[in-house]
Amino acid sequence: MQDVTAENIRAKTGTLTSVSSLAGYMKNAECESLIFSILLNQVLDSKQAKEIEDRIVQALYDT
Image 1 (cartoon, rainbow, N blue to C red):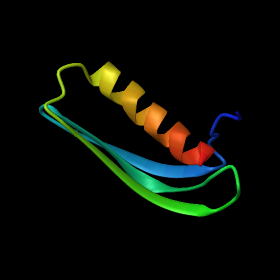
Image 2 (tube, one colour; image 1 turned 180 degrees about the horizontal axis):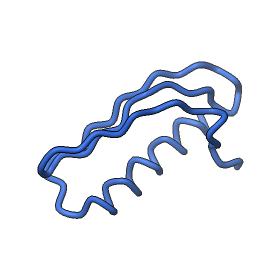
Image 3 (cartoon, one colour; image 1 turned 45 degrees about the horizontal axis):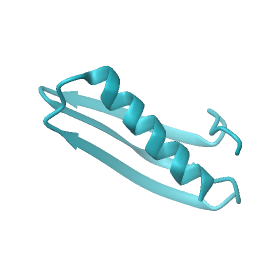
């Protein structure tokens, strides 16, 4: 498994009180283009939310 890199992804973060988001586009490990939008609601720990978003993006990359 290879980690997603800055060359593979273009994304923008966003936050509001108790909400975290990440949206953008990327090329996965097979060089297929993907568009994604991740919205997390009722966020109590913003650091943990970013870790979840990172894991989701990595899973998309690995598909």
